[in-house]
Amino acid sequence: MTLFFLKQRTYMSAMMQKEEGATPQASHSESKGPWDIPGSGDSSKAGGGKPAAPSASGGDDDAKSANPWEPQSASSGRARGPSLEEIFRRGGGKGGGFSGLPPRANGKSWWPMIAGGLIAIWILWTSIHRLDQQEEGVVTFFGKYSRTVGSGISFTLPAPIEQMQKVDALQVRTTSIGSASSKSENLVLTKDQNLMDIAFDIRWSIKSPELYLFQLDDPNATVQEIGESAMRAELANFDYNEAVGVARGTIEAQVKQRMQAILDEYRSGIAISSISIRQSDPPEEVKAAFREVNSAQQRRERYLNEARAYASQVTELAAGQTTEFDKIYEQYRQAPEVTRRRIYYETMEQVLSKADKTIVESGNVTPYLPLPELKRRAAAASESTVTVSGKQ
Image (cartoon, rainbow, N blue to C red; front, side, top):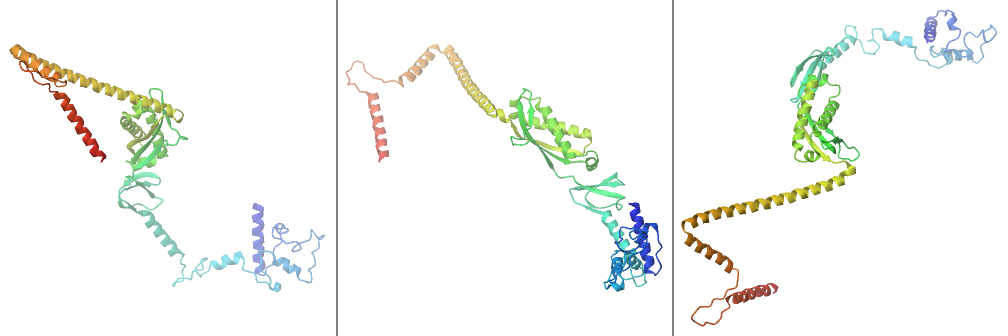
């Protein structure tokens, strides 16, 4: 590789000397180069030490003009662009430099002013920062934490001396663990050795931007791993029926508390807002059996509730009857005869009100008058009248 560049440099020097009218110096590196054309130049090795005679058609000039580092000769009749050395040589004059810009009035180049303008734009662009109401900016000095600024317009030293990273501190982020799909089950073992397919959401926000940026490598992955660990630890303290029922809110609160304690120990700068369980089902293979068991348990609970309600009703009725008997006994102790007669009359009234009665007066012969039968006939007649009118 070094020999190749040395050859290029030697050929460029030879071409510059040829343009100025000097005779090129012969060298060992010029005997055969990557740009030589067969039949041109020194051919002593190929022709037994004698140079080849030029052809009548000017083949020697064409072979020389084929060299990409030499301009075309006038005899070839083809125009050739300037060489690379000439381009750089022309660009270094007073014409404004290689950019081709016209010179200033005083003859100086525009490059210093352009460079100064670019530097000023860079300083302003990297020194003035505008933060929204929900944002906070973490400023670093040569990569080391310096300070945290609030919303509004803030000024820092230009980059790379000081740099600012904006963090949305008020945004509530959500990390979902588990899925409702049967292909991605998140199985957790409960206290009674049952498996539960659970899916839940973790809502969290940033309370310390500097800790959030520099303490954790991947905050989202950290929150997910801590959430799974905390949920498994809490569900191990509850039975399956409790986890899917009455203890669901307790589990969410305890998982939040456990996660916050671990994140504070890590100095993560993250605050857990809430835990929401979206799904707590048995595994797909035994879901039908679990549903049957749950249905049987619900029926058992219903029967138990009905039995408890009946027992409570009977107990209250017995308590009421006991209280009534105690009151009657107190009255009986004060007036036994009157109390006996009243109890007799009340009992006969209850019995005879539901039976057919025939009254026969002594001493006189009266015709029999079936009052209950007449009442039944009157009731039947009224019912038939209502039925016929309904059909009409």
